[in-house]
Length: 189
Image (cartoon, rainbow, N blue to C red):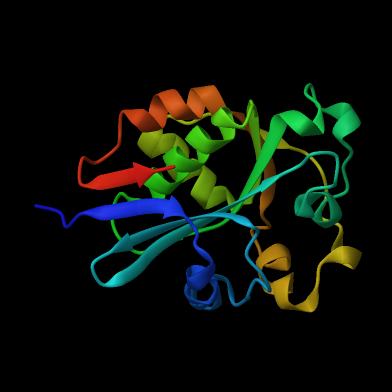
């Protein structure tokens, strides 16, 4: 039987540990280190400590971080910026935790009145999500804004294959991810 894992919104005393956890995974996988976590962040913990993190960025008029990393404008999308949430810094080290973090993030975003997600992912991650859960997403054909990518993020953004900017329906993701939830993972929003 799986050990119980709990997912909650980040607490102030967890911020440094959560950021270090994300940095360690990003260093190992992508050769980069995010400078910060976004304020809205989910943390998954088991009895030993942090086993997953996913950050969310809600826009109430201000630009998303991704808007500086890609050459695009919300005017070409079917929905206004205020209907989107951006997911990022999504890492997990135990089976089922990544799915549960995304499910919790989608729940939170829907509860906050958002209908679509915006994220940046390597194509192999997108293919794996589609294969495993049947998740659909729109790959947005916008170039990476190489002049605006900070030095610490260049390995991730400029290594081949380059990441893609994607949009997806949150309700569709909610419906698909709900079917894959493990009972040993508890979400407290």
